[in-house]
Image (tube, rainbow over all chains, first blue to last red; front, side, top):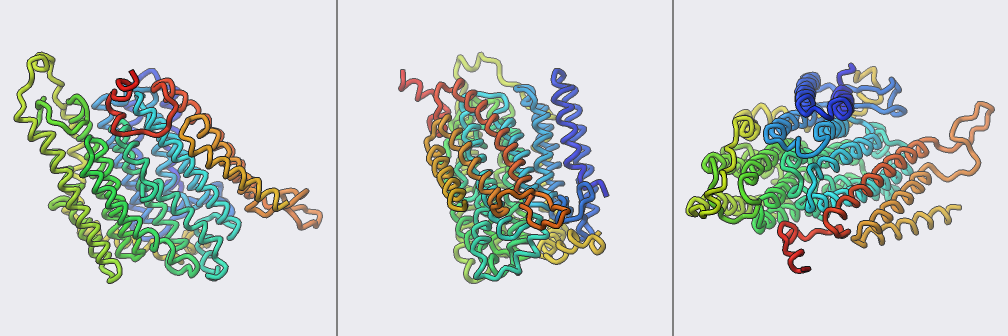
Length: 508
Length: 121
């Protein structure tokens, strides 16, 4: 069963080879990177089919039995996240290559592979300290990607992003120290055994660790009050990198799903009430910030970044229920919002690179105005949650999941009003960018300048692909949400997880 | 012993947070370094404080030993924070050379134009 570690090993081996052997040959690096990422997608699909029957597979590194050694755990949720990562990565990579972003700085492909290694590792690990290490791997790669191709604003935004995340890492370590001091273990399955044994009157230290961990994961997931870094970072990052970062916020969401459900979730007397109590109001404020940001943004990239913030709020409002129904709705919305955000960033890159900047002001149309307008319209529909794409179904599932009497008023108002404001914001942006500009006649001097090159098939294909995925999610919503329902119920099956990891004879 | 360790962690954290809020590159880097020292000592303490004990089980019957796991964690944390600090220094230098300013905060309304430069000129 060595397949489980391949999503970590493959990019980890490929990245240094690209960095050292292929650094002078961009064509070779591109071929290797695309081949590696395609192989990763194949492996991820293989792992997903392995996990689809509902067994939890465990890979013991060095064959040390848990909880003494580090384990990788593959269940439906991890497999889903790895598939999501590799599919998104392949699409983004094609965009980066066809638009030439990867050649504007050095080592794009090596950093890209290291990033994939960190993300896949974070999704697969069954040890919470190992999760920290993979967080650092994906972060240090993301620092490099964030400042790819340089520039004043990008360097400053990158510096801010790095400082924010380093402070977060310190907090993560404090949380892990507290957790280890009070339980004596850092293995997720072992923690899931020990935390429920702690009575509520002795749980003060663990409760501190729970909240600290939640702040750290919320920082990654851009949840209020630690969402401030996201708009500046995503707006300044190179567009393909911003599209790849759509999965980074989901790493934080995944960590909350995993740790605050399996370990601290329902069944742990001392800690089960904590996460939901704090997540719900935080998610509502996050939706508000995202929606107002979309409405108020004066540039295109920050507008999309704020819509990502809003989608994370919507996601967490469902997670905060900590019910299987809420989780399966959140998972559906997570898959959807990852591709929707990526799609928006990719189409925005095509648009902005043919204008004088990403300022929301009318400019004379250049080339393929109609095509870009149609693509932006479709992507905005997906992000705002309008039919017929999957955003509508995702929000419907979430509304259905938060029907409890004490959450329905706040939850429904936040999601519905947030969606309305997002629609207005995107409508405004789209009409300024594409509609108003048709009434402007090009000025004399700009008319003489050569028009920007029209987008090639290869440049439009990634956007089309993400839109196809979103449409597919909507068409096959039945089977997909049935599968995600099983995923969510497996997530709540604490005993099954513990048995698989700690008693290998039963779980294999 | 407990008092010394606890207060040193507290002082390091206080200094680190204070420097982190200075919003200039160099103090922020120092602040993050102080914070990582604090967290390293804290991780040590999470395995209970013990003096003169080896982190391995003795086969000569002496059952007292200090927990080796936090030491391994601290080692990992030191390596990672060292690497991160190096990255941060390079990045801070790069941002300073690009922007001629070592401020960390951004004003998104001005960052896309040359308003600041015009005002300064």
